[in-house]
Image (cartoon, rainbow, N blue to C red; front, side):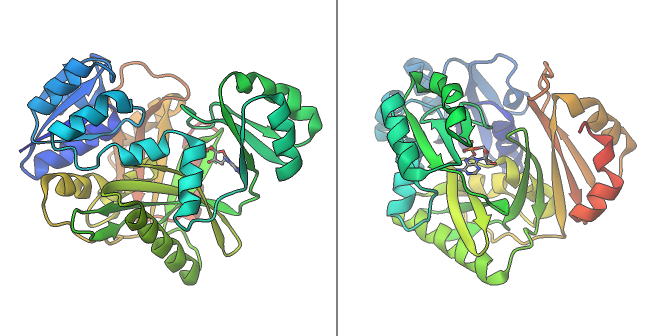
Amino acid sequence: MTIGIIGGGQLGLMLAEQARLLGARTVALDPAPDAPAFAVCDEHIVAAYDDAAALEELCRRSDVVSYEFENVPGGVLIPLTEKYHIPQGFRPLYDSQDRLREKTNAREHGLLTPDFAAVEDEASLRRAVDEIGYPCVLKTRTLGYDGHGQAVLRSAEDLPKALPLLSVPCILEQFVRFDYEASIVLVRDARGRTIHFPVGRNIHRDGILDLCVVPAAMPSDLLERLVGASERFMAGCGYTGILAIEYFIRGDEFFFNEMAPRPHNSGHYTIEGCTTNQFREWARYLLGQEMEEPRLVAPTVMKNILGQDLEAAERTAREGCGDVHVHLYGKRVAKPKRKMGHITFVGMDKEEYDARWRDRFVK
Ligand code: AMP
């Protein structure tokens, strides 16, 4: 069978690697001629994500199609879902492409979210601030990622710096003074069976994921409630396929922050840290195979490698340390905040990572 992948980034690359191990072929579509996944896929198509003819060609060459890129426009995807086998469909993408819709949907399906309000101009921003109070966060409703398109407002003095964001529709959110962030990756098949990967504790730097530490070291009751609510959310929304959900944890409460119907950066640790990984189980879902319930092999730390850490990562790879697994995505141009790879430290907790490895990377 051939899996078609819309998007040829590192998520597509890692899906293609796992699909091959399961005996499947892959074909990826991406606008960049040197997209990372092209190095591993059997075939590729260089085209824009909204090129209807190219997407149709991808579908024709595939038995099943999915996406690793979350901004595929519905206008081109929806007609294809009627003709070809795209089992995740457009719905989870649609629900996640707009932060207002995403949080409204999360609330309607039983998840607690930060307070929020739609904002489209200065007057509605002032009304929303009166309602939600300081501190709060103004975010663009669409196309924001890794802290781009956001401004934290701590007092009325911060209002002027937020105004430029209002050139597009925005959402104002209560700023949650969380203890930590955590994420879960689930895969639900067509029969409604759901598996999930162990919850990770996420540590960000400058709005970008830096470390994912597993297990998340949270009370078992809280963990159980978070997993149960996530499974019910996914089933209640009728989603199948892969879904990642990010939460803010405060005391014994968890607040939905955002979701993505694709593998998650925080789930990269599963490749070596679990008995099966997020890419393999996603591939099994796409291929209609029985999914496997993952187990954690040992405490694991995943470190993201951005452009500024590439040399240190290459040195780590050359040293070839047993339970230190270096993944480099083969991107030609290294930019300071660009995700170039990740390193998984299996059999290590945060304290040991800090003592032995932290100083190697740029602070
Ligand atoms: P996002 O792109 O929405 O995931 O935001 C990027 C990061 O900004 C998050 O991982 C949080 O660290 C922080 N952040 C976003 N929204 C909030 C919020 N409502 N309260 C507190 N921190 C937030």
